[in-house]
Length: 172
Image (spheres, rainbow, N blue to C red):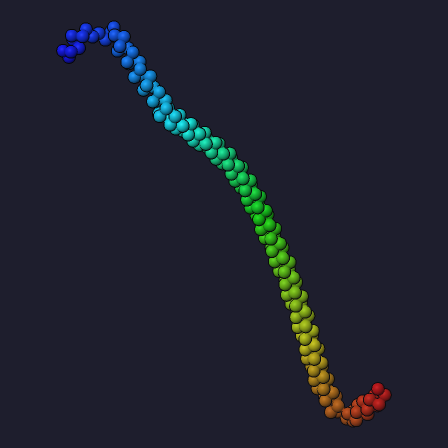
């Protein structure tokens, strides 16, 4: 510091030599920086700019793909809804057909059972009528037999009856 004090050094009024050497060193520093530092910095900035642009392009592409996927999802969802309504409609139609077939089958079975019951009732009625006729006939024969025995036990009317019955048999 003593050396600077003797030289009459002033920061506000620089000497021409100081100004010259400062300018030369600054220009030399600037040339070295331009040759060795500005090129890589410029390349790094270009690379960064390119990376940012690529990222923006990819983001736009991803946004477009998302929009496409969204529209495809909406189409698939609409298709699924249509298929669901179609399946529900078919299920309802199948249910209605099954119920209709079951009713028709039940009606046919009821009709067969009714017809079978009516036939059975008719057969039972015929059998009962036949039995009643047979019993009535037996009763009539028994009554007639008893009446004839009483009547035929008297005088010779028994012989006359036998002869008339034999005569009728020959005619038939």
